Image (tube, rainbow, N blue to C red):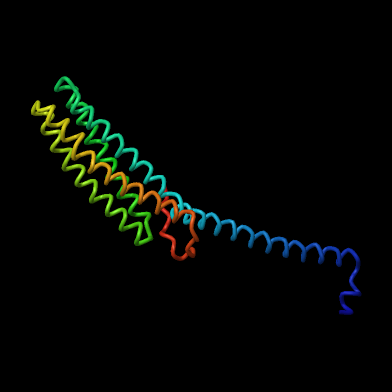
Length: 191
């Protein structure tokens, strides 16, 4: 330690500033590494906690729009109007199925996966019934189509809505619930 005491003040100051610079650089490097890790982890948190809710909301919206346009197909007065509304029904069904597929990709909970499968099964039943209503409406059998739409189709739709509500509740509770470890998160999708 005698060698240090024998150094001039200028050399001691330079050495202390150099040492402080190395320490500050190390702290900065650790800080940047942690910020990068936090950014990466936030993408996983988003994918696990909220991305599914976004796709579920869009899926529910398309299901509602499909139902509205189904009513419009039955009530349309001209064949051109029916064709336009029918195209929208097909478009919303396709979009709904695409959103549900994306939603299924964000699910890591078996109970939510089961509820999602139940929704898909309910939609198949609903779509089959809607196809029957469309066939009656396009054949000019509006009264039978209306009876089917406001009769059996209402019950099927209520069941479909109940399965959607259950799925939404499970997704919401999963987003609010305890977070799994980062290693359990599904990989984040990048846009």
